[in-house]
Each structure stands twice: as structure tokens, then as C-alpha cells.
View (cartoon, rainbow, N blue to C red):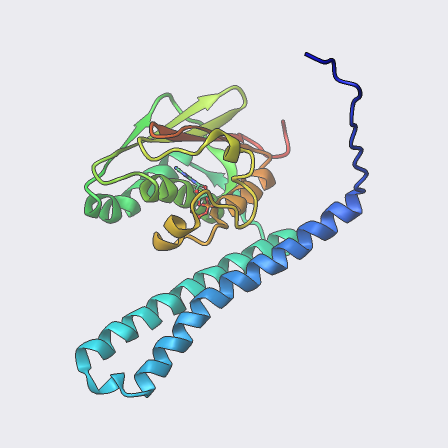
Length: 251
Ligand code: ADP
């Protein structure tokens, strides 16, 4: 065998500004695409109705149901986009107060019960130690928990298990959501917090996802000086851990 005769080096010099510009363009392209998809269905179903399908009551109801679902999807998307934009522009009005993470998690788990039952899944919540109160924005942290537990429900097949732990650590508290779901391939984990990044677009859409839930969660957790981590194994399950300091300013 012959020895290699040379080495090819590829040097990339993309300045931070160029990188941000690329990201901005990609984001606009994503938003446009995400909005066009439901709009295309709304348009074609309403046209078919106007072209005569309205006369068949059963068909008409089916078509209207699709239009309604697609309009809901657009509403969710716009709501998430507005929220991200407020977070980006530092226009979010934070409401930091003393609050109990245990109470928040228990309430969120309770709110998920109907969805969980309809998918014949099990959800359990364990408080593993005495958990101190923290300084946090209850409503926004509730949204974080709702997005993460909601994902566990969405990406776990019928009959699967979801376990939520709440506990304390040095100077802080954490909650962990573990599921026995489809998991995330190793090569995708790093990108999972990016806006609109999904492992399986079709599945996410089918479950009503916008692809923005985890990026919003990350922004909110970071505004609390906390961290969010994901561990996952395909076909085994996923574990998402959120760690929050007791006080956001006094680390
Ligand atoms: P989506 O609205 O698509 O659920 P998210 O930002 O909440 O958007 O999540 C991004 C992607 O991460 C999802 O589309 C899915 O591919 C993956 N994901 C998130 N949570 C889980 C989980 N518990 N199990 C498997 N995949 C997950």
C-alpha cells in the first residue's frame, strides 16, 4: 500500500457576525415554511368546501375539523414565536417571587393526567428530599415543566412510563423527567434546543408540536441562572434535568 502523499486542510473563517446572519436567514426561512404548511391546508380545504363539498354534511364537518386544527396550529406557532421574540428583546416582564417547585411540579403532573390516561401511560412523581423554596417566575417555570413533561408524553408510546423527580442539591433544586419513550439519536442531542429543530418533523407535527418548546424552556431556565440537560438512548428513553439555584442573584 502507498503512503498518503499529502494532507488537505480546510480552514473556515466565518466571523461571528456572519454566523448570526446565517442563523437569522435560516430562522426566517423556517418560520415561513412552518406558517405556509397549515395555511396551504386551510386554503385548499376551504376552496373544496366552496366548490360544493359543503352540500355533503359529513364531508363538510370533516373538512371544517381540519381547518380548525390547522388554525390552532398557527395560533400555537404565533404564540411561541411572540414569546421567543419577547425573550430575545428582553421585553419579558419577569415576576420573580418565593415559590415551591414541589407544588409547581405536582400541579403540572395533575394537569397532564387526562392526556396521560388517554394514552394509557403511567405518570408518577417522587419528591426525593426536602426541597427549599426558590426565587422564580412561577408561571414561566410552569411552562418549562409543561413543555418537558408534555414532550415525555408525546414521544412515549402508549402504555409507557413517565417519572418525575423533584429534589435538592447544593444551593439549589432540580426536577428530572424520565420517560420510556422513543429516545433521541446521539447525533441529534446537541441540536435539540435549536429553534425548529426536530428529530422527526412529521411526528412532532402530528402531536401538535411547534419545534419551539425546548428553546423556550432553555431561555426561561437560563433567565433563572439555571441549566437544562438531556440524556437519551434510542428505544430506551429520555431524561431531562432542570437545575435551578435557590436565589437567582446570590450564587
Ligand atoms: P416539539 O414541538 O417538536 O416537541 P421541542 O422543542 O419541544 O419541539 O422538542 C424538539 C424535538 O426534540 C422534538 O421534535 C423531538 O424530536 C425531540 N424530543 C424532545 N423531547 C423528547 C423526548 N422526551 N423523547 C424523544 N424526543 C424528544
